[in-house]
Image (cartoon, rainbow, N blue to C red):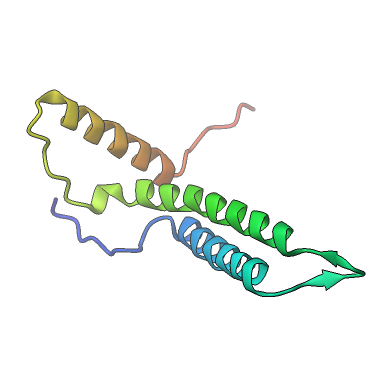
Length: 109
């Protein structure tokens, strides 16, 4: 608890991925709904709506990774329901440490 929490210090790549996918997805959704885009007589509005929804769905993976990577810095409250809350906290912190800390494997020679 003595460490300073920097907010966005961990998993910046996941955060950038999530924000970019959200922006692209929402833009695609709005274009598909409100713009009439036709190429050679074929309407591409439905494709833009579906692809926008998929991009927003992909962004959720980035948000989950970013949140998991920063969970150590958050001050989690203990659950009053017994050991279940602490087990979930331990699992989340273990996952967060594995995501953030680089693995050092010695290569066999």
